[in-house]
Length: 633
Image (cartoon, rainbow, N blue to C red; front, side, top):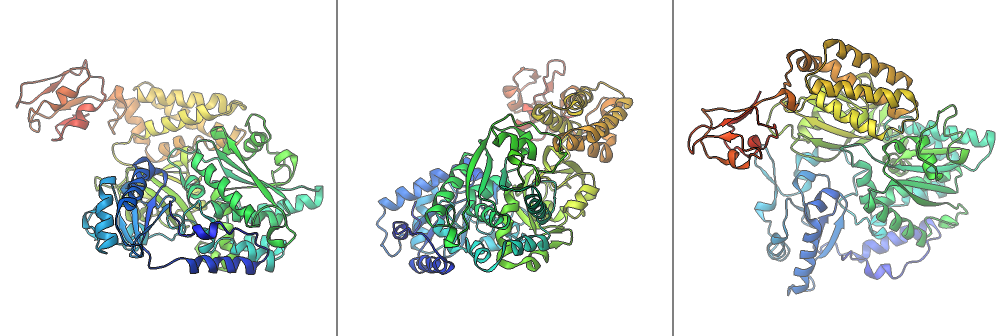
């Protein structure tokens, strides 16, 4: 990997003032030739899964074997997730800003010759709008990016997350220096309060109020005080925090250091689930680099303020995303929640005042300190300020990482930025807030996406997962899936969660088999309310949300399962039958060859039939039919 800062990397020296930081930034900028071609390859999780590492190696090998003049020879930069995951692997060519999508290793030599040497775009690799077919040359031209307001994500996809020089060039650690040299700890806390920043982990508790509470606890009971990053992102369909840690680890670290300065903390913890090895690697490297430059550790920037942090790996328990369970895990005990008779800002880690915020919350702190609370609070809506990062997944054209101002409508996110459902039909529902969130129907498309509006609608912000469903998704099956997940992830410490979730899941299992009655629907609703009111921690109290919202907005679908023994979406296997439309069937025999039960018969070029008694309803026949002849009822 060539970053263009190799010479500077061998001259690392400890920074002792804000002037030193400015000087280093200027030195890095002057060492970089803005006219030099640079190949930027996305190494986010989605692109990596599609082979972007092979593309990077292909570029390296092709450049080493080429006879390109030295003045033309490009550098290669690998970045975090660039956002448009559905069209990866993504490659950008700077300084032209050309945006190539779905790149393959076989495209590399052509890119070098035509784009790097001849300075011409390759039309077939340009991003093409799925609706209009229009080709867009740069990221700024693509509606997916144009309609966003990227603050937290502004550097992700632009900088090399393993190179602190890239971060410093982009303004990294300037907010920390500003806080240390021009603000008192009290002024930092006041600025966070004034900004209206609310925790992005799901509860939406005001960050400034939490910080203020910790200070009051220290004054009353004494310290030390701890600061903790919650990187235990475990929601199905969520990868926001992981992408931030992968793609801009210094943003999280800088926010944590500023918080430590404001609160007088000397020790911090970054709790990251072990399933995020790349995030752990990049955070660890970021901390090493920050220590080398005097931005972390003893006597930061020669101000007399000392603070250090360490990474704790979570074992993958979903419940450890809950604050008290996370604390007990860091303490080396089983990650079980405990009653919150006293808030964690008073008695958290090791019984001491502790400020716990999630990854995205900490990444917001440098922005607020750098540009001011008034600037920040002007974005979003009055009680939900700033932006929010979402993972837009499911039945949507532009699957990916999205950042918009709080209060942006659901339809803007799903239909305009996300491109809508691939079939062109309206979406059926959107699950917000992960497994503990709710399913909002198409009729809620104009709902502003902010903390209070989602809660009022029966859902929640959660960490930011947003799963889009279409007419082929069954809400009973969706609720059943999330209940099963939460049942398995529950610690089982309290009775409402231990027994209540199991019974709720059993009722949903019965519905999917066509067993039960309309009385069971009422019982499910009643039980959901009981668990919501009686569970010990947020996992249990929010677990009924998928049931309650689907019962509220899609009750007719539940009734169809128990009264008519039909699954309107054609998902629940015991309630559906596959058949072949004789008018559409061409007799190509593809379905018959693929059927594992060999239950499809018919002569070649004549309509086929399915033996319903032997059919296991696997759906392979429908997936393989090119003529839409296989139907479900």
